[in-house]
Length: 486
Image 1 (cartoon, rainbow, N blue to C red):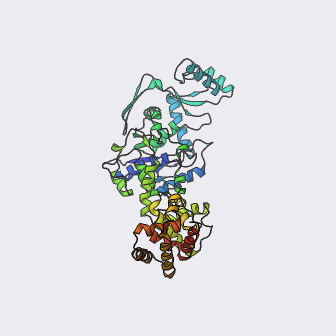
Image 2: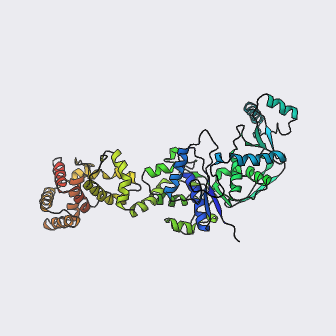
């Protein structure tokens, strides 16, 4: 019988959910869905000073917004809980006692000052800093003396000497480390809280995790974890270390590259479908040239075999291109809802919208959807619908309006628009065409001056859609305003 695939996502709740963490969660989720396995959500909150429930809620809300649902873990329960590390301390203590009893771990009474001094001396001598094993074989008398001094010990794992640590990686193939370069490492801090490398091994093993897919920065932790699996007689999972995410300048992604948390992208009015599609392409390459995938297509196409070793570049332009695809497909009502906070902040609308104003705004947004990559960008394009004080965008626009035919075009358009009721795109198109015919002018000699008279600009939205949305009275007033400035 085939073993059930079980993967996990185990974030630390120490701040807003990072976009890189979302990529790791997505790869785990895609593999679980592809293979009919399970995704477990576990919270690693042993960093007591920085971990908060607020951050935990942010992580869960962000995952749900992205459509990444977990099968077991926080909020869901399951037979391998609890799923929060601070609720598993008794479990860790039991295994620590086993390691101490077998001699594979020992109490270390070295103070931070002593360890810092030792590290400094090693660096001064050109050595790599490592623990030299001062407390490895303490005499009972030394131990009693340290206890009498009130020293609170850590627990260190006794790393076997002259051993090759080898494991298979789904992305990096065979990886090996020398145990002599690892040094005896702390597994339990002096306050009794296990460190990451220890707790993660016990959690993964006891929760029957079969595949550990995580970011490349964890690769250097893996030899310590492999040694712990071996010492505890626990089955080794399959590891897969996915590439780093770099900014476009090929340095590690940070705040200077733009938004870094999922919540920031949500608040900017990106769509979850766009973010998921983009994140999937960060370090994974589909078999063909296609780059737009819906959720089900991603699940079917995904495989760890096509995950790259090389760093992935977080290209905001590519994100915007992909998200624009989903923006165009979305309902104008949804995009309007996402745009509202940005329109309020920019001063275009107030807190409350009357029903007619909202209906008008939805039509405006529908007109602009093809020009934006995310909802916050609406403020860069919507001004033409609100600002009635029209000015020429440049000298060229001003010169066009000095042409000898302009007064005839303006008068004809104003007369026909005044008589028009209702003002609809097809009717506006008809009067523009009739003017070109009556005045025997090319379309450019009519359409562009009318556009400039209404917007001040030579290019922009479809004129026949723009005029009905601005409305008859405002359109005529704008024309009078600009004509007066010629």
